[in-house]
Image 1 (tube, one colour):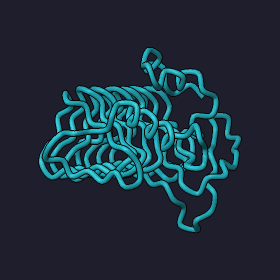
Image 2 (cartoon, one colour; image 1 turned 60 degrees about the horizontal axis):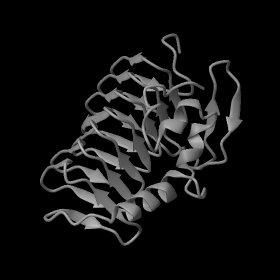
Image 3 (cartoon, one colour; image 1 turned 180 degrees about the vertical axis):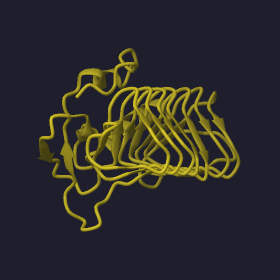
Image 4 (cartoon, helix red, strand yellow; image 1 turned 90 degrees about the vertical axis):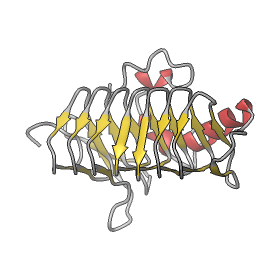
Length: 215
């Protein structure tokens, strides 16, 4: 499942370029999952001492680089990590498990949770992203939502390009969006959605399973 190629040189997340099961990163029970890895990295970085931030570190440490732009009324709950060059705009909400790489944008009224935003990825306008990976330089149109829980609360299956499926064993799993992909305004992805590299999903589309233009 090659979805993430431009990330190869990143010091922390380059391994995803050849990871066969990247969805395991969002497993909160895994000691190598996103929650635990962010907590370790934020702790090693010494937490955050930036003034004026609404930070809740009761569930894990928070690190915000001095060279990240943070707008007013942003709330960040740990564990969370924001790299230099990231932009967190007015009224954004970063919940536990948010890792925001350099060049990323989390926009006004956007909410991120247990999600890895790779370099240059953007959730800039009224977006929800839960338990997901946004590939490098991917973009969510205004109002796009990444759903992460089935209505029946069952385990989330994952479908591959050949039509085969597996049971991930996870109750919460959003989307894996490949590098350079664009989601139009008001797109909704159902739990376990996979968007291949360099895809363009039209506005108002609902994505289930593995996306292809004919799906």
